[in-house]
Structure formats: C-alpha cells, structure tokens
Picture 1: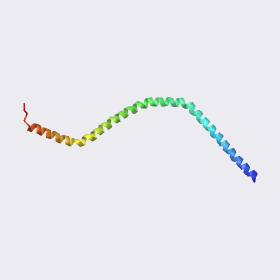
Picture 2 (picture 1 turned 30 degrees about the vertical axis):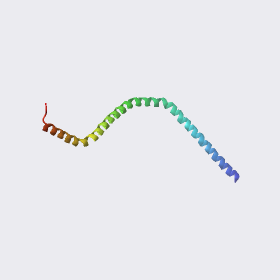
Picture 3 (picture 1 turned 60 degrees about the vertical axis):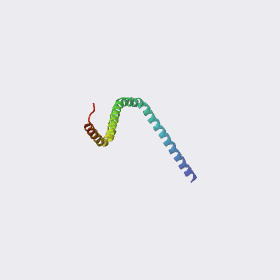
Length: 101
C-alpha cells in the first residue's frame, strides 16, 4: 500500500515537472517570437503614429473650437431677450432726449 502511495506521489511530481518544463519552453518560444517581430511592431507603430497623430490633433482642435462656440452660445442665448430690451430702452431714450449741440 505504501509503495502504491509513493508511486502515485512520484507520478504527480513527474507530471508537475513536465508541466513546468512545457510552460517554460512555451514561454521561451513566445518570447523568441516576440523579439523577432519587435522591429516590425515598432515600425508599424511609428508609421501609425506619424499618420494618426496629425489626424487626431486636427480633430481635437476642431472639437475644442466647437465646444468653445457651444459654451458661448449656451451663455449668450438666454441673455438675448435682455439684450433686445436694453437696446429698445436705449433707442427710446436716444430718440426722446433732444440733442444739445
């Protein structure tokens, strides 16, 4: 019985060692492939960055300008009736008062 238990334990250890070895080899191949492809990844990243960055910058500037105009309109539109009333009062005072030259 003890021999069977010992054999089972050794088999479990052997499976664990094989699994660790397989994982190490797989990680090594993955790292090797990553290192081989690294220059191409960097080149593609550089090309995409050079092409995409100006587009993103222009779109961001346009979006910022649209946001500024929107906030300005958001503040100005509710004040337009007061501006019209003030303009009418100013026009009436200007017409009613004689000009002294």
